[in-house]
Amino acid sequence: MHPRPPLPDGASRRVVELACGAPSVHNTQPWLWRVSGSRIDLYADRSRQLPFSDPTGRNLTISCGAALHYARVAATALGMPAEVVRMPDPLDVDHLATLQLRPGPRPPDAIEHLSALGRRATDRRRFTSWPVPEERLASLAASVKRSGVRVLPLVEPSLRFRVELLVNRARDRQLDDPRLAAEQRAWVDRSPLEGMPSAALPELAAQQPPSRGHAAPAAPDLVEGPDGLLALCTDTDAPGDWLQAGEALSELWLAATVEGLSVVPLSQVIEVASTRFSLETEVFGGMTVPQIIVRIGWQEIGRSQLPRTPRRPVDEVLLT
Image (cartoon, rainbow, N blue to C red):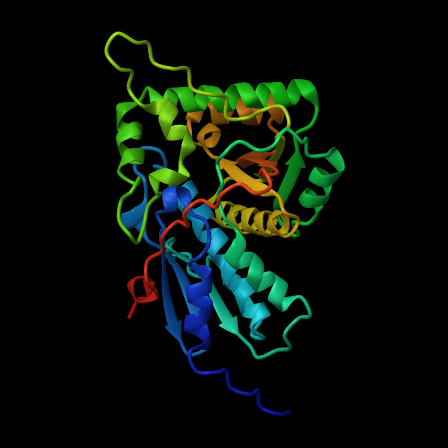
């Protein structure tokens, strides 16, 4: 057998750099990495967990799953496909994955995939009135090839109505909880390296306290008629499922980006225990565990670009 050619200098670091462009809850970027030659290890950064909205670490792990998928896509596109072991150490729940890079051919669509990593963004502004056809939703759902994760289009009117009701109920309950409100505010305009720019959060206007003598404006519905809705679900509800749900979310998001569609996660309905239970039992009949709901649609042509969410430098997320 011929020995494998060595990887280029800095290859693993470059994969981590691209992986850190993944979406994360409130742009907390709750990941840490260790690079040793061609091996990359992914860890949860518990110092960035949100104690009130995410006490179990579900959203943190989903965010890390998205970063893991980004790393896999980047490695493959750069000609270094990764062999991945998830949850490699049963005694260390924060050690989420190990990637072993191997030299390999660059796929024909490598440039398209790398471009999608750079173009993906969370644009929470209202979509156009063009509905997303059911066939397009089914195609996006089928594009996710993640074992243990099912992506279900929510198109049946009564089911969809129930989901919209639960999403708005969860949002309202979170707005009424001062601890959750303070936790979210702490990650708005947090620093040049992390958190969410207020300019990228059009819904903040609906959450401002009323001026004296005026009633608070009603918060707008989070889902509108033309929006497509997809549910990412798993058979069980353990950290390994959350990690794979995050990978599936990223896979779906990049496929939508290539097709010119926008994706906005609706995590509130999962974060609130009562609405998560209602979603699982009343909408899905207890047959599957919903991990996240996303709305999908088209942005207006010619609409201005929102500011990019910031990222921590690679050196800050690398363990020594």
